[in-house]
Length: 283
Ligand SMILES: NC(=O)c1ccc[n+]([C@@H]2O[C@H](COP(=O)([O-])OP(=O)(O)OC[C@H]3O[C@@H](n4cnc5c(N)ncnc54)[C@H](OP(=O)(O)O)[C@@H]3O)[C@@H](O)[C@H]2O)c1
Image 1: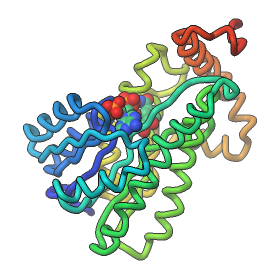
Image 2 (image 1 turned 90 degrees about the horizontal axis):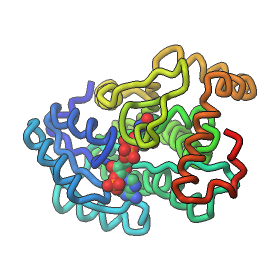
Image 3 (image 1 turned 90 degrees about the vertical axis):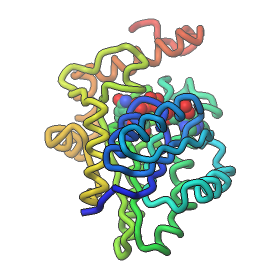
């Protein structure tokens, strides 16, 4: 069992949604939380909270999509906080669209923020973890990485990428004390999910962000390889879907997920004043 107390944790996407709850949970464990995201004001607020809750809070505003500059971020962190013991790749963006409605820039920015930045940060931090023979990498993926979410295909691809990449490097690092976990939340009452103001599909369980934070702490403490937030039934559902993706398509249509995501796409496009272009008028 790994103890988090006294460890230095790099948490991306600490300024909003689920990240705030993970930062609070780490603070309770008395960790040093190095919070990274673009908004300095929000980061300072969460770092102050971390200090009050018993941890040490350090904010470093940084746009992780500037992947070529992540080495500068890592140098800065090393100078301010010392070596990182645990990295939690949590920052992500999503954009709902029919696939043909994405621009190349959309595709690049979602892939870079959600997947390439996590890989590059980890690549930069890993040698020090291996040299110290101690460390933990946690990637926050999603149920959308287990079965593609229609109208959120690029995001789904990044989350599937995170799951498989985690799986591969966990095997590479099996003979070290550097541990690797992927945590896959489903619908969570925070952040991205709340942005659309739409309900979750019928039958889908909605978790609390504290559930995700607890799952992250447990994944680290108990060295869990892969954590699915929605429990056994969801894991069973995804296993069936693995056997027959088309049955999965029917299930997603039946529970209303497909329609819901189509509505999210239409709402986003409407907000950008271009919904007619994508033929989504028949919702
Ligand atoms: N909420 C859900 O229902 C749900 C379900 C499944 C999985 N997840 C996963 O859980 C994680 C957290 O999601 P959330 O709902 O909390 O999302 P959120 O509220 O949108 O928060 C995303 C965080 O990422 C940061 N971020 C985005 N782009 C960034 C960039 N270029 N550089 C640095 N930081 C950046 C944001 O901060 P700034 O804007 O200040 O940069 C923010 O702190 C994500 O990996 C998401 O995929 C969420």
